[in-house]
Image (cartoon, rainbow, N blue to C red; front, side):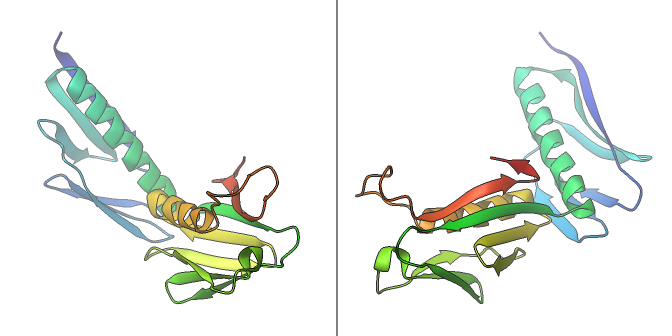
Length: 180
């Protein structure tokens, strides 16, 4: 059944939004995020202090696409107001592990006594800081911050050992202010 569906997203004060041909640029006090969307048949425009996404004869496909784009835009607006923050904990039982940041890589030394250091990719536009056993990942883009945190966690993943015994590694403990 086709019906008229439109979704409106409020633009808060201090945030600027530019829309052109399915791409959106959101600027705020913390920085800038740019993203291209495959909008298909949807109407994607800025009216007054709102972003309007919708279609006059929307099907289920357009509704799903509209809700997905709206969620991404809300995350972009939230990110430029206050950066997304992930916290990870460095855990070890016997071999003391050390993590250092070198350019766009995190170097993990002495993981389970290994001689060769492991590395994790830090995506461009993400700030990573190490304070004793807590790693903080911050970015205005939620996806970049999450992917960098996942890269750090995956660098110490164990595949050939029993997870109940070998509990060393780097683990996400806080995602966007929510404890895990």
